[in-house]
Image: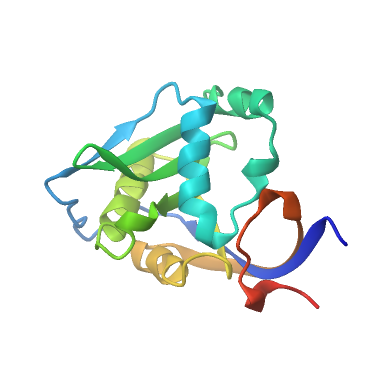
Length: 186
């Protein structure tokens, strides 16, 4: 029995070279975005694992706590959590290590917030926050394992596709992820 599952995904890389000009959609009045200035490993894992459970987010699950703590404490990495009625509803992670390009490393909603209409406003919060710092560009990537509305959402927000690549991931079965059969390679 293999200790990995081979998965095939198409990764789409996107870039935005100017801020959007249209007005941003508003978050609901009971929602707010909070900068998690000193994000703990346990809170990050809660956000990452919960948001990514249905979308085969696996890479950060394999990172040891000490290494993840170093990443989270980097001045180039920023974590923002979306709260609705005081409860976490999503998060995004920004990486400015390649300044003046900022990468939206992770973005997503917790399962109870998917389909509520907050995704576009939350994504726009991330985009607007980044452009206030006047970078040259903002990047993000998504793949065929992500929510089907991810790519259309990034395009609506103003990102443009720069390239697509097929990737094979050998995911440890010990992670216990639910992998859609359509992604499993024969």
